[in-house]
Image 1 (cartoon, rainbow, N blue to C red):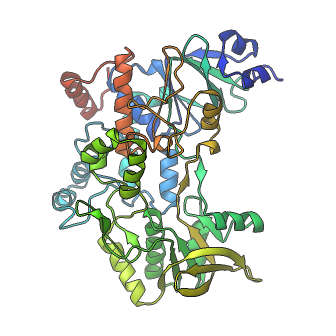
Image 2 (image 1 turned 180 degrees about the vertical axis):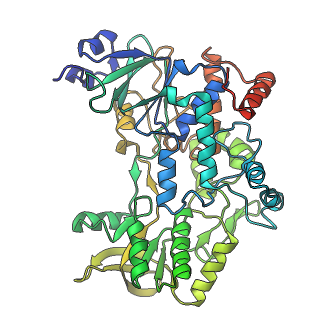
Length: 505
């Protein structure tokens, strides 16, 4: 075993003594709080804690990313939301600003010297579509705040291997730094608190598409919307083609809009077959006070969750509900939805009239390939004969994978850290987002983001959701003496510092 690496004894021990780590030659660095992930979830917690008086020297964020928006920017870009496009987020949902004021609409109106964003907010959603910010504005705002709080001083690059409990309390977080950056393969950070915000483990493919890719080794014609697939649009710009799109959420709508934009802009002859597993024909829901608009196959919702899930009646219901009732509520208000945007609806109307967009409700049985390499999708549906659709490409827009065993750190936490899954198969957390079962003396391990879905808070995988988790975690840390409270005086003084772009004290 190389010096400075994990030994068999360390790998098989759920609780590590200081001497056991030191005997392996792994350098140990003390740091009160460590955040694993380095995305928006890590950024929001560090931002809140800096506002609450924690110095940058007391925290580290461990990440393979160069910036907190890197993964988010990549996913939005490849799923057809480049920097100039508007994302699916509320005007007041600002990762860089826990107060939400001024909103993105106010900032955009100021920067562009235009009242249009303000008028849109004032008249949404009856007179206009809901306002949402451009991706570029979000990234610029997060970068400004990262500079202000000293994020780059807290960033430690590398791949986190595991988090283990420490004998006597606290945790060891094992980091593999970039090759050649140090004398040992691993380093360990010894901390009282650990925060996990690791996002999604990877891409989620439908079973039949995954099986086809494995069997044929096909990565060119069958693609996931969350992986680079610009070659699809490039090929369709050179010659007529047929695309099968699968999925009915925001990503599917963005992929369709890109295909339609290209067709109209460049005079292309692209044909689209859109396969719906569930075809929504109109408004749906259990009663008048919990109904969602729908039609033409789509379920419409402005944001990923109703606004009351972020801070209203639905949030309170979810917090008090039993795990079984939470599962039923989540099935009603979450699920696959997309905003009903006027421009996009007009595009779909023209596409249906032109007979080059075909919406089909069907179950896919299998995917085959013709001798010339084209794809054949075999489908079946109730009350009609089996159908076959020949296409040049298939774009899977069904989402990202969030199963914990697919993530190395989460899988190790389940095996050695005492963590346990909830009814949704994610980490079971308490009201302060502490991961239940992972307590280590006076140390606590917290989590936020997609890995905490299915607990007391519904909208975890959103800007506001990650801020809510950060504020709740910070409240718990304040009770433990790690940071200050956020009363009216501190809140106002810190907002003034934010507005003046001055470092928090």
